[in-house]
Image 1 (cartoon, rainbow, N blue to C red):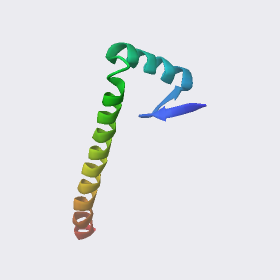
Image 2: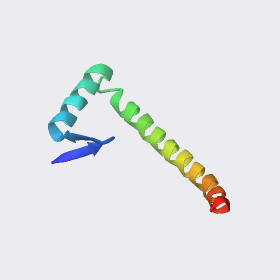
Image 3: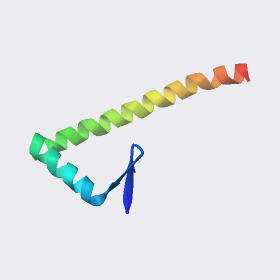
Image 4: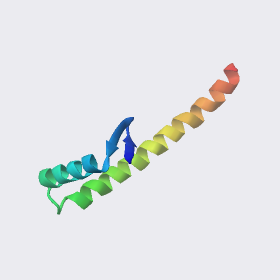
Amino acid sequence: MSVTLLGFGIGMQELLILLVIVMLLFGSSRLPTLMRSLGRSAVEFKKGLNDVEEEAEPASKRLG
């Protein structure tokens, strides 16, 4: 079983290795804060992407 992450097939073993590396770099106490920030960033990115799509939609209808 592999998980697609940004177009790359990453298996469970690779994800576990990445998690261990992140825990070593940032420490287990800062990990929840880091993940929370990452989640907020993803939400903001999606909102921005949706805004751009909504603005581009009327323009594409005018051209079409």
